[in-house]
Image (cartoon, rainbow, N blue to C red; front, side):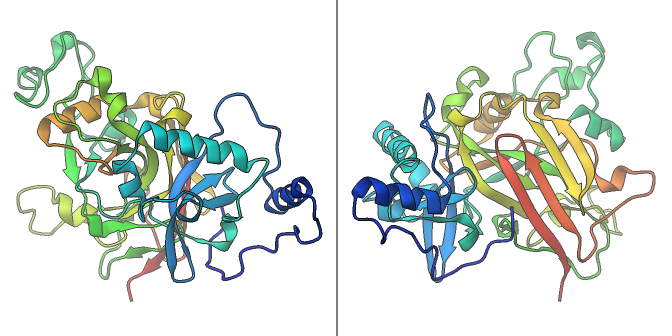
Length: 367
């Protein structure tokens, strides 16, 4: 995806040359690049927040090329994507499915080229942004963490085998470590195409390309077996990390220092509703730094699945629509290399997850 910019004039639809309604609609579709034969099944789409000049709106993304302004297309559409998720219902889903299907043959007047808009973070104010620590075995190994998976249930440390009473019940024969969350500040959220800022005086800033769960409805003490019902969809987050630590070593690892600086949570670019992700545990994950592949993995290597993470989180706190759970990073971070590699000004950061999208950012020094 290219870096996006606002524009007053979004397209010059070639419909004025035609008087027949069908020809006019066809010409507009050609101009927008969305002509196709309607496929079997629902038309896939993504949802995001966009800026056109001074105006911000909720948009439907088709084929990563075209955006339909939902506020102008559907009466009563909320002004934010988080509010739309909170008000989601079967009639809303049906209406959006109809808009997506019809747009391939009869694009509404509110359709515009994606490249003419600025993409904003899909959600900027979750009640909580949880991140999962060391949720890929290879990442645990490269970080020389003690959080490795035991070879068998019999080898599990007795303290680990207790689970986390009240929050996490370990099922018989489970050899894995217990899940671990930390919180990133909402103020760290930034968008696709926005810069990642290296804080003044810090020189060990690292990347972590992660899939992010978007909660769809209020969840409390949910089982992993029905957790999918509480997931609205998925997006991407780069869990940018300061590996420099603090000289005094007070209380061990300082998660807030390492994770919550401004711009340390690039998010988006869009949210993909879960019905368009066939299996969230079988998606390729790739991160490139200046077009060089640094992370190349798959969500099937997660230690705890997206459904287990929703279960654990919902036993710890009530989750609300628009809350976010990042599912952890695969191996390939910069700090774990024989010769560590860290972000430097001018770097291009690209996080891609199959079926979800691509999140791009440039790196700048703090001024």
